[in-house]
Length: 187
Image 1 (tube, helix red, strand yellow):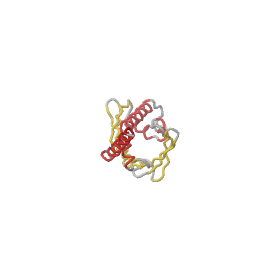
Image 2 (cartoon, helix red, strand yellow):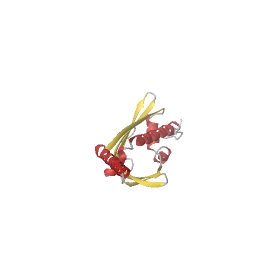
Image 3 (cartoon, rainbow, N blue to C red):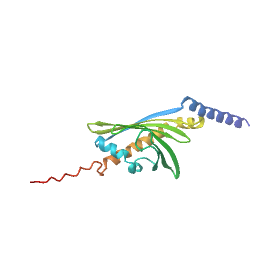
Image 4 (cartoon, rainbow, N blue to C red):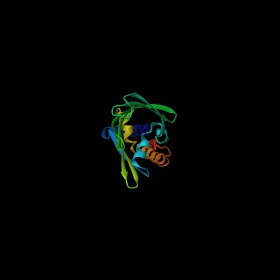
């Protein structure tokens, strides 16, 4: 009986620590970056090409525009993600966009909310792509879970940006076709 009592006390302490951590860490913040050996313009074009999102975003299935004009501030989309056979829908709202510079979005789902920003910067070697994420759980249990998930979420973002680097550097699609030459009449 004494062992059961001590076991119950240990379980209660662990549960208390779990929830206290959620109260003390209501959100997590992490950054990731990757250097791409392509131009800023091509890097932006590939990154913002919706038809290629599944090549670099883990679990990406599709995106459906709900409101707005798409790729404009205030546009809202439902992003479908496959998470080990279970499809989740995440509401994405674009909060800032400046082509070849920055895109920022808010993601909303039942379990958590995320503020996300991706910046592209031209460097001598190519393009530096840097992301910043702030994630908070919705409710005490979710906040507590999120407080223990920072390294896993950062690892996922590192993987996504690594995949984006590969997609950009192996890109063969011409996003900037030459204008058709004008026909001049030679006299």
